[in-house]
Image (cartoon, rainbow, N blue to C red; front, top):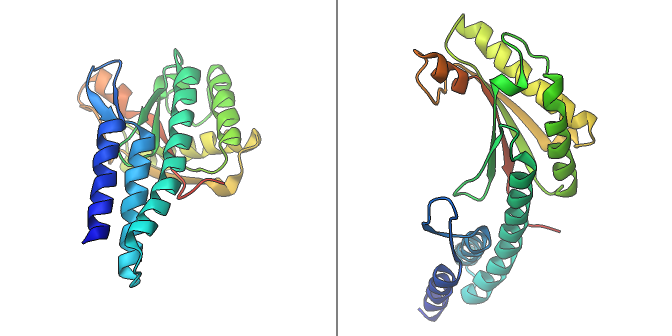
Length: 217
């Protein structure tokens, strides 16, 4: 019971102290350091209880410290990426599970029906590669997407080729290949209406997710 109260007190304190105001929406939200701390505390406590540990409160505190380090690491990285991608057409969105999502729309990355990177987009990927090399504790998932025009099988292959083109460019700029996983979704995951030109433009995209590490060294 005492350990449970300790964990609850930690979570309550963080919820109060870890809030920041979103400059765009004006809404209160937990910053990544607080989210990481809460997740670490919960994870440390759960592991301790599952393994029969008698020091759940201590293990929650250890988990909180590790989680705070990860949260701060991801928060700094997100801010750097937001600054680097400003004005490029790439959106950077820290998500609720601690990862960072970057959406690269097709109109700036590839010509129509092509998997060859636009030369004008390479400087943007150079900046991204530099950050990925600086923050080298993350793994990266690159997902290719298309609109619904054309054969689904062809679109699946095109989305894979485009995701691989981004992967290969990052590797050529020093990002370790074993950190990158490529997935292809073709036309199966639209984010807009494929019946309109504007919607199809939004659906033709490459999404890159910077995955939060379990801990930072």
